[in-house]
Amino acid sequence: MGGPYTASWLAQHLGATLEGPGDPSLAGVQSLEAAGPEHVSFLANRRYRRSAEQSKAGAILVGPGVDLGRRVVLRCADPYLAFAQAMNLFHPYTAPEPGVSPQAWVAPDARVDGARVEAMAWIGPGAVVGEGTWVEAGAVIGAGASVGRNCRLMPHSVVSADCTIGDRVWLNPGAVVGGEGFGFAPGPEVPEKIPQAGTVIIEDDVEIGANSCVDRAAMGTTRVRRGAKLDNLVQVGHAAEIGPGTCMVAYSGVAGSSKLGAGVTLAAKAAVLGHIELGDGAQVGVASVVHDDQPTGARVTGVPAIDHRTWLRAATAFSDLPDLIKRLRALETRVAELEEEKRSES
Image 1: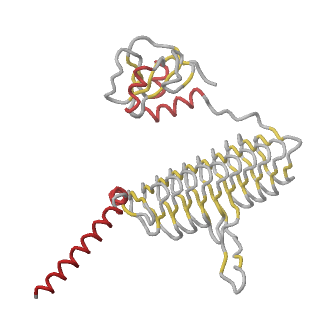
Image 2 (image 1 turned 30 degrees about the vertical axis):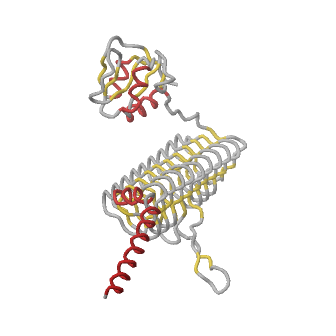
Image 3 (image 1 turned 180 degrees about the horizontal axis):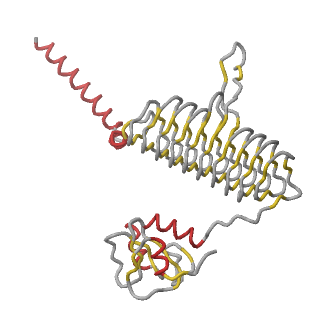
């Protein structure tokens, strides 16, 4: 654990401005409620302003225009980003010393250059593992696979044969890169399996959550581009492409051959059907299903997904439908009565 750090030192390293009385020494980061005088906290949502005013934190990260009176604040453009950076300062990641456990199995022709390989890990023939990478207990790197520098493969994660992992990639427990894509052709009795002969490329600075799967392509490549972040229990289908900086929240999935642009966000349980393209910065709401292409900057929600603002109006009106139906039926009855009266008069 890093620290303690003075508030002025933190301000300098976070690109913040120190305001208020004193320059306290800070030993860690805590929530507004749990923080004491030795902690720095943050206010990223103004609904928690009262908690910030009552907090015992030694310093608080705040945004422009936030006034908490006479107390030490670190003013910055984005308090939540500064919080993340502060957490990394106080909790820096340090890879263990390199070495191969005698209980690990490493193929004679595999190249393990300055990596840490723990007990029960398995590294296949012709595989390459870069310097500073940590292969934890039970992790598997298949034959001919390549793992870059300073990666972390947590317990029981898998990099299947002939797949490529870039630098600084983090696979959480149970993550599988390069499992079989779901490829079957309808047959007279049972579906005919299509061999998945392609591969997967995971670019630099990607994180894949626990029990998430990135399937290999039948032909060609499934690709997750630089800096993408996949939560737990996420599915990426064969030959799909996940754009740089994209975030996929838990239970979201992308079907085969679909393509997500840069900075796309899929909320929890969102699904993108096969052969769909989402433009840069597109956002898909919770439990939504995208069934057609979406342009750059689109915000869609629902099943099927439609413009988010339209969906909000529809969702608001949904609770009124029973009463509207009742009123409509009453109007239909009244119209029928008036028409009957008119016929009687004629």
